[in-house]
Structures are given as structure tokens and as C-alpha cells.
Image (cartoon, rainbow, N blue to C red; front, side):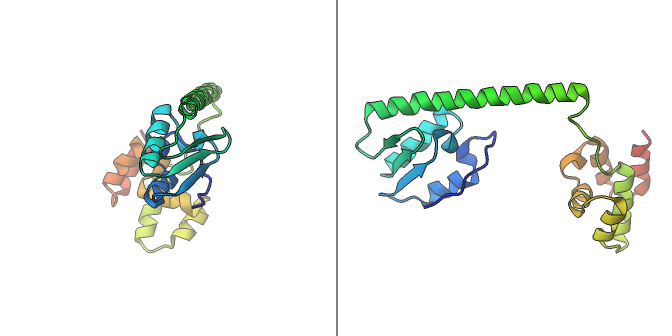
Length: 186
């Protein structure tokens, strides 16, 4: 089975869509080739859990970058050691990346360049909601507001940046434009 590269995320790999597909797909006797240990799991515990689960299902696992292979019934102690050590290094490296990223975000926020204002104010969202309820096409509303249709749909649904306090309060009373105007005046 050929798997597409999975984007790096902060969550453990076992909750990722491709890992779930892999675990559901593999059968006894299959051979799983993984580009690198950090592509399969983000922690040593998850790595061992996934690899042990696969090997217990009689599936062999090969890590290309690290040149480590684990097969049912023939795991060498050196491969287990390498799995633990290299998996630990990958986990440590990932935590350093997250730490540096957090520091960079904090510095950018301090300079005022990280957060950008929402494209639509609560009043504009209320007006867009009112116009949409009158049957005006959402593509026209978005064009006239100077935003993409995606931004408009996110705002109308109260998702993303539009899920915060002042927008959420207005979503509770979707038919009332005055409630939005009152919130935008605060």
C-alpha cells in the first residue's frame, strides 16, 4: 500500500487520517515501509505502540531513513534499541521545533505583526446574514464586502476567527441585526 506523505501536525500520528487508514488496511504478511520514524509517530510511546501493534499482527515494518526493520518473530535487540533511541531523538527534535515556533510567535505578537484583524466586523457579519436571508447570492455579498466566499461562509457559520466572543453572542440571535450592532459598538 502506498501512502501519501502526511503533513506534520501537533497531534500523535495514530490519530492522523493516513495512520488510521494504514492500520485498517494492513493484513498479516504485509510489509510497511515508512520514510522516517517521525512520520509514523510523534512520541516514543506512540512509536512503540504502533510498531508493536503492527508486528503483533504479523506485519513487518521498515524505516528507510534510519535503516531499521522490525519483523514478526525476528526482532533483534539492536533494532529495538535503535527504535527507542532514534524515536527519542525525533521526539526531542520535534519538541525543540515547537518551542522555537512558540518563541517566534510570542516575539511576533509583541511586535504586533502576528495577529491580523478579522476581515469582517460583527456589524458586517450581521448585515451579510440579513442580506443572505433576503436571498442575495452569497458570492455577491462576499464580492461587495471585499472578502472571499470562504471568509463569508466562515463568518456566517461562526467558525474560525468568527467563533470568538463578540461573534458568538451575535450568532445566538441570528435574526437580530440590532444585537450585532450593539456588540460592535462596545
